Length: 155
Ligand SMILES: [Fe+2]
Ligand SMILES: [Fe+2]
Image 1: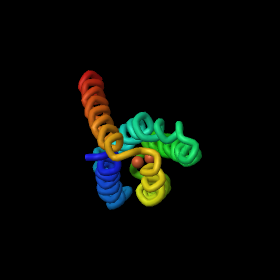
Image 2: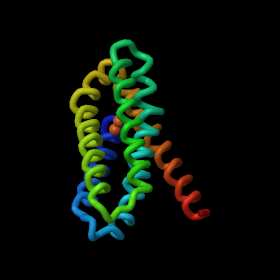
Image 3: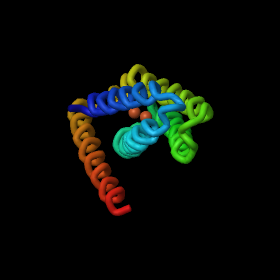
Image 4: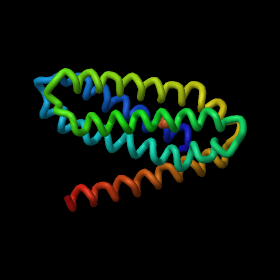
C-alpha cells in the first residue's frame, strides 16, 4: 500500500468509529465511555504518524509547505477537543455538542486531505517514495499502538 492508501484506510476506520459513537445518546453514557478511548487513541496515533511521515516531507517543499502547516494546526484543534471530551461527563448534552464539533472538524479535515492535499502531494512525492512512506506509516503505527497497549496494561 502506498501512503495515500494507508491514510485513506485510517480515515475510513475513523469515520466508522465516529459514526458508531454518534449513534449513542446521553442515556448510553456507559457505551460512550467504552467506545470513546478507542477513537481517541486511533485519531491521536493517526495524526502523530501522519505528521511524522507525510507532513514532514510536505513541509520541506515550497509548493506544499503552507498546506502542511495548516493541516498540522487542524490536528492541534482535534487534539484539544479529544482531551476535553476525554475528561467531560459522557451523560449530558454538552458532551454531545462538543462531539458534534469534533466530528465536523475531523470529517472536513479528512475530506480536504483526500480531495486536495493528496493531489498536491503527488507532485512532490514519486511513486516509489509513496510506497516507502506507506510502509513507514504502517510500521510506526503498529509500534505505537503496541506501546500504548503496554501502557494500558501497566496502569
Ligand atoms: Fe491529517
Ligand atoms: Fe489524515
